[in-house]
Image (tube, rainbow, N blue to C red; front, side):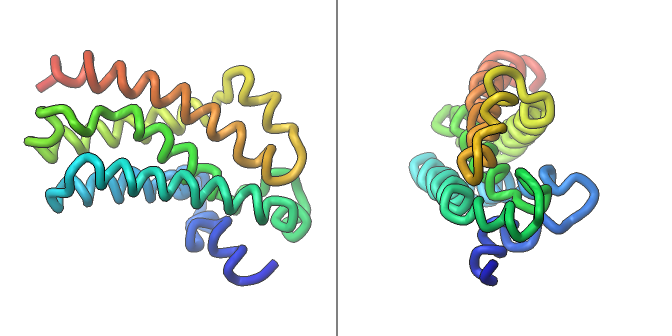
Length: 170
């Protein structure tokens, strides 16, 4: 596997961090989202950044997933975390970044991103149907699809939490 492929699939090397490489690999989208909010970026800029992370993670898995499984000698290798980047970015689409509460208070944006992070990790580990079954697909498709399904579930729950639970907390 070439250096670029390895860097793309391991999210710049985060996939080698232990323990819980998937958790480390899930960090870039919420960190970037929170930094953008703190920097005063507009919601559309945040959504563009998340879309780019989603596309980059998905394309890396689809393009290089077969060679990753060959190089690491197993199905969906733990060091490959581009799928977590994609799934986490998809989850954060469930955060209503355009809401006045999040736009005016970066601390609330932090908690919203944290909620999305935790919820994605739960759905990624539990893999509710059809995520577990989809994971058995060959190569990069099997690597990334289960995380995208987990991302959809987590996005829905994140939206509910941020819309209804978090406002009552603060």
